[in-house]
Structure formats: C-alpha cells, structure tokens
Image (cartoon, rainbow, N blue to C red; front, side, top):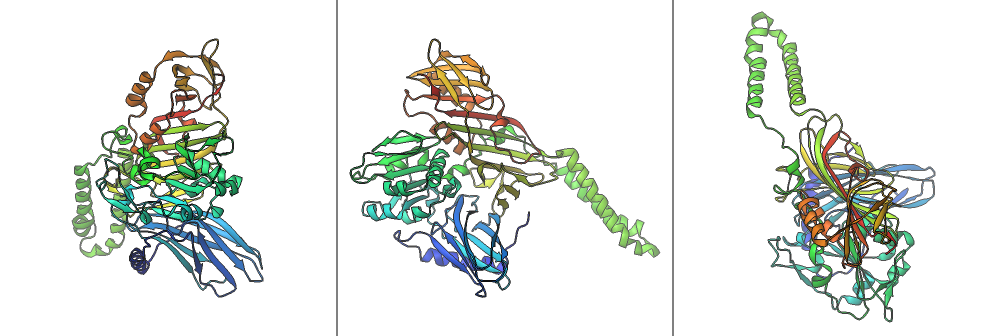
Length: 601
C-alpha cells in the first residue's frame, strides 16, 4: 500500500504553524468548520472543507473534497492524506476523485487524525497532498489542532451545535475540572475551548465514524428534526458505540422522537447500546460536570485507550512475551564479524587472491542473512499468536449490532502486513497503548506509521517479531437476538449467529441463567440472582480486559432491575469478532453479547 513521506522542511513548518495556532487559540467558541484551498493554475478549483474547525485528538474527521473542473477534459485527482501528531504517530489515507469536464463534485471523506501514543495534549495535523491536472506539481492543504494544557487530554472532546451554543453560551461553564481518580491532573481546570468544538448540524456526517473523535454531542431538537434519516441513524449508531448524545427540547416540547424507539421524555437519560441519549428540557439548568460527564463518560476515549493493556490485568498476560536471547545475538554478531573480517581477508582472499573480496563479501553477507532468517523462523515461527475479547450489543429496534474489540498479539516472521476490514461494515480501528504511553510491551507507538484506506490496512498495525494491540469499533446490520418467554416455564430462543456458552436473562427484577444455548432451539432457564451474575462478571468476563472494554462492559448493564436485558458468552467467538490479519492465531478468543430481549414478559 503506497504512502508518502513528509520532508524535513515540512516538519519544521508543521512545528511553526502548530506554535502559531497555540498562540492564537480563541478564548470562546465562535465558528464552525474550516476550509482550505489548494493552489491550482485556474483550470480547476479544489477546496477541502472540514466539519470541525479544529481536529479531534483522535478518531476520524469528516471532510469534503470540493472540485470544480473548468477544463475541456475530465481527469482523476489523487489525494494523499497524512494524519499525524507532534509525537510523530501517523495514519495515512489515500483518495481518488474523478470529475467530468465542466462539472463540479463534492465528495465526503473520513480522514484519520492520528493518535498520540501517550494520549497527551500535543498538537495534531492533517496534511493533504493533491496530484492531477491543473496542479503545478503538487498542491497542499493543512488542518491543525494546537493541543492544550496537560490535563486536557483527560477530558472528553465534545461538540456543540452552533444553535445550541448561541442559546446556552451564557450558562455554559468556561472551565471544567478533571474528576478521574486515576488522572494526575484531576485537581486542575481546563478551558472549555480546549475540549470543545462548535459544529453546523446541517453538515453533520451520515457515517457514525465521523463522530468517533467525539465523546459527547449537544444539539437542539429542531436540528434533530431537520437532520436526514441517514444523519440521525449515524448519530444513533455512534451513541450505541459509546457516545453521549444530548438533545435540548424547544419551548413547550415534552418528549423527543427517535426513529424506531419509544418517545423519550424530557429529563431522561436513556442507555442506548454502549452509550446514552439525554433529553434536556428547554428551561433546565445545564450541569455537564455532574451529569453528562460522570462515570466512564468523564474519561476521554484516548485516556481509556492508554490503559487498554496493562501489566496485571490486560490481554498481554495471556500472550507470552517475545524471547530475547542475548547470548545467541552476541554469538551471531561475533561469528559473522570473524567471517566477514579476518577470515575473509586473511583466508578466503589472502595474498594474490585479494580480488575475491568482491564476491566473497556479498556471499558471506547473504549467507549470514539466510542464517538469521532461519534462526528467526525456528525461534518465532511464521505468523503470530494473540488474545482478543469482543463485546457486541444488540439493538433490536434498529436491527443493528454495535461492537468493541480489544486485541493483543505477538508476531514472529510475517510474510504480509496488510489486511482488509469487512467491506460491508463501518469499522474504526485504533492502536492501543499501555499505561505509560508505550506500545507493547515497552516500545513507544510514537513515530509509528499506519495505513488505513477504506477497508485496506497496513503499515505498523502488525510488524514482524513485534507485539502490538488494537481496539476496533464496528456497527453492523443484525437481525438476531434473544426471545424470552416467561410462561409456562421461563425459556429463551436464540436467533443469534453463534451458540451461547452461558446466558443470563433479567426480567421484572428476576435473574435467570442457562448454559449451552443452541441457535433456533427452545432452552429452559434456571433461577439465578444478580449477585451470581456480578460475581461471574468480575471473576470471568471482565478478567484480562483493558480500561476501555471494562468500562464499556459496565455501561452495557441495564439502568433498572426491571429492564428486559440479557448478557451471554458466545461459544464460537470468531462469528462475532472483527477479523484483521489472517496469519494471527487467536489462542485466547472470547466474545460476549448483550442487549434487550424480545418476546413475552
């Protein structure tokens, strides 16, 4: 997969512009979106529009490529896009847009903004390079985020619609206090502009991944009603994947109408998949610190990713570390040095045979390489081994399933580094880091370069003889679920795509359990209790998971004991898991599925 390199002078320019952006950081939220034009010879106009004025600190940024072709002939324009942070972690994207002669097009794209391995407040940028007719060589455009204070990375990055901001800016707090016990900066305050963004909801993306850089989104009911069906479904899918959607009703309105859901009353916070939807009354007092940003929602996604794998409880416990045999390495270097040096000079090519050096040295070098590869193959093997855990949340009314997957692997010799994500699903992939900001076990992710272009991934996601981790989010179509019947004897019928090893069901304050639940067959339930479920959850399901997945597991629990709800472990996890590199053997593979059951009461 092709990728491009930024020259050293561009890095210097990036640092200067980032410093300038930091000095010019506004004290209030004034505008939404940003536009950058690419210089041309006049025969074509190219503009890149961003839905957000500043880049989110991670995730995908929704942008639009606008091209007006004044030429008499059409032609494709190619774009190389590089999302990078000040620490050097980059994600490469590639796009191609074709425009007929005399026509204009606007193509929405999703650009990966890069991820700082330390989750710090460093600056980030997206570099655009354009190639095609009407360009004098190469055209460029850039979008920046200048970062913020040291404590800003601990806070969620949120967006407010421009209309919501106009209505509520007088009561919106100017600073926030970090509240996470694990945050060393929790006693410090953060300026609201460091963690907030104003957006135009009329231009909101119709793909849930366009919201992946946000933890929360506030908007007005009139904007929700004016949004297209695709935009509303994208926001619901994003909320199901762990986002917080907050809608303020207009004067006189008492409930919010959501497609496929019963009307939500004002003042209610409704769990939706792994996230939540809050309906705010028109005249209510806004309290984002105590309300919306409580629990795991007080943590930014990147802060949770930093603790995704740790030494005591992470998936890395289940994967043996890479062996480091210092004696073998030293022995190889010593023997190779003897061969290519003294032995080569004074034995193979001594005296009048000195010209032999021109072929003995390359032969010895190639032989040493072959020996080294053979040792690596014998020691580490081909492919790799790994551990992964998947959590799937069934959304029966939307006919969807939201997934989050935590995985960690150790690789030997890889014959290929590229893999394809499912082409019929909307998957977002991010590298995970350990608690000290380093990639596993202690090699920093900073400076790593990732390729992610549509469904095609490559680069540093998987490297030979390395250890790496990823977190994947997915929202896919799903018609399966759990049908519960309370009489004459409590039972279930599963239509999920995998048999279930263990199943807990909650109904009207009662807990039931079953094992070995086959698909399409009626399975009787046995009485259980919430204490038994919590004990199993702590000792089993939540074992060997990172912070993000552990928090998502907690958020999947129902808000009330009377809620119709189930939680199960899949017998065949591979049927739910999001596939990545096929040469990885997942020795530890678990998948859990939860959500509302359907049927009788």
